Image (cartoon, rainbow, N blue to C red; front, side, top):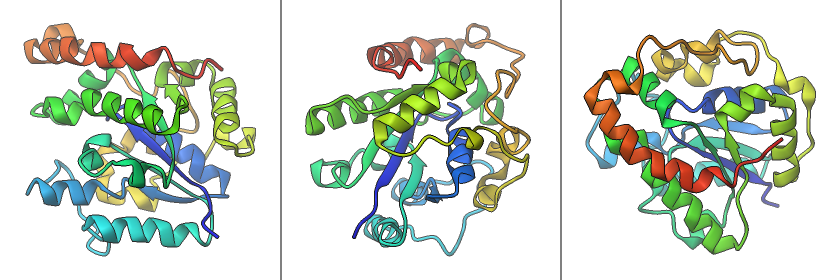
Length: 242
């Protein structure tokens, strides 16, 4: 029997890896870290800044999906990924395999955080339009609002937000998973530069990142902010309140 496969569709720098760390801490899910990203890079004939590819990981879409489904016959599965990686393939058949959930964050924070690591990132890589499209597509297919976490709510009230998330997706709430040991997990070693903050963390805290600029200090970021904000606001209303 196929067990539950929970996805967390995210925009970059939205504390999605911290959420993934919490799911690892639970111990009852097989966790995949961004399984479709190598497929995305292959399709775009591109590379990611700071990426050390896992050569044992499949890069073709059907093989990645088969890997996830195979694991789900053994245990429940959780993975996080960016909607832009699969949006061209995310039809009803694909999305219906999963319990689709989402995490968002104010672009004033994600864009600055991304810029700190890669000043040349694009509006597509920022991910807001694609995430909104995926969210609305899931609503159309299922007829219900997917579980949606806002990163700021998560750090303000981890207990309430994660409890609400677990109730929405039908899994036990494990408050003991809200804290963890500070360690760089093996799943992150191929993307180490992107996950140093969460590797040093021991839970969801307000000071997981520090910023020395704002989106208004960099003209390109300010332009991106104006483009991203309407997509963020369009789905923000559906977030779990905790």
